[in-house]
Image (cartoon, rainbow, N blue to C red):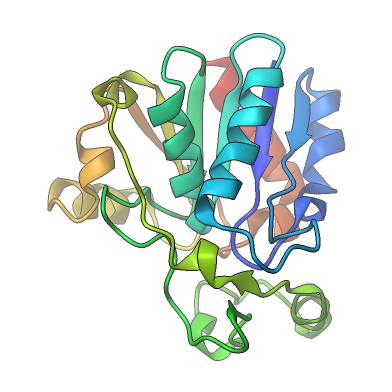
Length: 227
């Protein structure tokens, strides 16, 4: 089965370098998706460009794929469900929640020279980054790709109610599934609150399990998609 892997902000497809071969060993075909503005050298990419790249990968898949979105890219995975509900086997979101129609994609941190650079580790101190050592943090910061404002400030557009029939697996890294369920039940995550087939699973990691727990994440993705 094809598993499309979409990394979150500031990351390119190499974020999955340790997860992808493990998924292959488990019988799946991992496809890291290179996003415009996050790995192709573009500084003028838009959210629409990133959505188009994800949909191109969906359309090229062999059979119905699973689409995995990490962090902010949970919204990209969900936009794929909205645009291709009949083509997806399911969606996995890791440490992030799909934005609602009309929300900005990821307008979280200050702009510098027309992009949103990695803001440093201060906003992520605590459970997000506790499992990243000094060297891992250095490597992340050095490789972080500023996100074009056309992406981070892009407006999310959702239109097809059939997206709520697409199976969704929420992987909970720095927060427990019980906490995620409270947020969903309280209406803080309206898109997942309406999902008809939602599974919550735990992983003992910070916000970037593909970097700190690749083997555990690969097993979890294989098991979830097999189910």
